Length: 436
Image 1: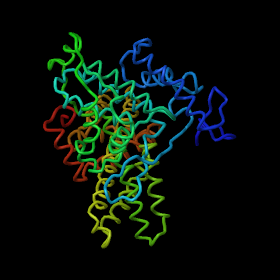
Image 2: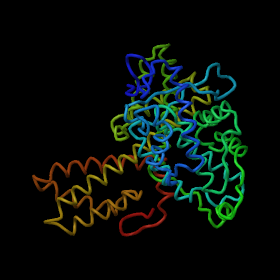
Image 3: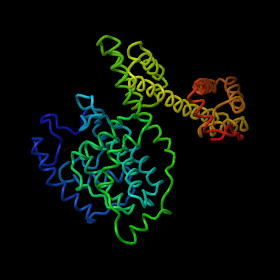
Image 4: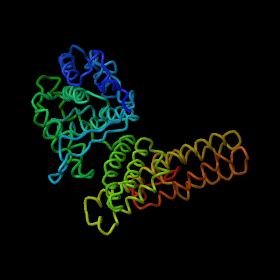
């Protein structure tokens, strides 16, 4: 679906009544360039929040003369979309790959999450070295670009935002210094991740080098103060939302390669490969569906990865491993969230007659929410609560829901990768279970 497109003309809906894509592009440039100049020159000031509202405000200002949907994200027109890259992931590729962006249903959430992480990093202040500044700018540019908030005009919106980000950090970021083709190529390579998701520095190398070329320290007391090392904040572990975004991004990329593997196994029949991609996309749009589809996706990855012929392709095997590994993590996250929800629901129902048992259950749920494993000791209050629920006709259904959620969570915790993750994050005990 493309709610931004005029079905009769095949051209983006616009205020100008233009019915030719070529003519519309010319008008768009004529109107957007002076609007961008207003933002860059300070005639129109925006608070540097770098959240969804901030990006919508930039887009609205740039394109207000051309599009009635200026400032609206892709969600407004239920537009997912995809497009060919300006780059090859490796020298053996005959055709550029297709870039796929974040689900349109998650744009606002993702922009807010990335912006929040950027604020926690003090909007990149404290980088006295242009090298470290460029590396962090490249990371955030890629995150915002992959989110791809708008139907049209993402590049211009990002240029305004990152020019302002540079000023906040004491640097002049001047996109006029770079050939647009080189910018597109570096941007697209970051999306493609040719070195795989485990090598972010390599994947962002071209984009980092580009920002080194177009960034220079600004003069003046304020800029110098912004670059002072005491302004720096440590690069923190990604928030849960950003962590989930990354897992879904890896799933999306690897599923297409594994889908091709299924097609090869089935001698050119793409039915199962297409089904796998559709299942992964369902999970990407609605992560809770991993509870229903996760085991099927992992089975497909295992089949391709252990195939006598296909297993000779080292890169394909890596894709199968990535797909399976990210699915199990997402399954665990969803199972944990489901347990917390069901435990909270039962605790609320128990409060009036069994307040002590209800509070114990809440404490366990709080510990699990912070990634504590559900084990023998902190599982006791759960069993007590379940016993009470099963004795009551009114509480039996919610008790059965928690029983199922508990069983699923405990089973997933036994998977080696999840067990290792929990062991690393949870070195000691407290009243609610294991500490984070």
